[in-house]
Image (cartoon, rainbow, N blue to C red):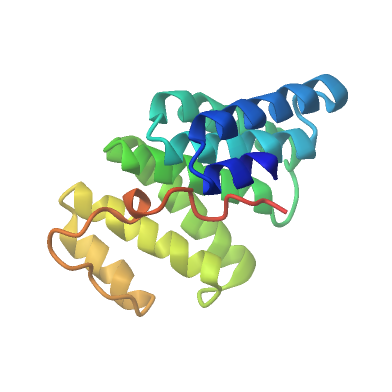
Length: 175
């Protein structure tokens, strides 16, 4: 929380320092794959993304995703895994790595649809994410089909990609 306050006060360097300290403390006390450690790492990745430090945030997002995939293997609803996939996909999209983001976005949409139904906000958000990635890949017809299926509007021409508009990835809080 100290990092969040520092960020709100405009001290992004101090916020990053505090968040890195929190990650180091969690790793030392709880281990690398403890859920609290993973959430703390996710917050650091979100902070780095807000600072446009994508190259620093990406390996953290990949680490968190790998850990959640292991921890939630066999779970009927791997909520944290799906959320972590979504965060990584949005980060990749913000870096114009849309070919890599596309299969992740598809996985998230299928997972949330199956677990939560087509009308849940997480499902709708993941449909919007996939549509944005598809549009970036010049797959406009498929993008429009997804938008229509979920009752979403096509973004105005020239508007930034969905993931680029926010400082933190959607669903950055896993708990």
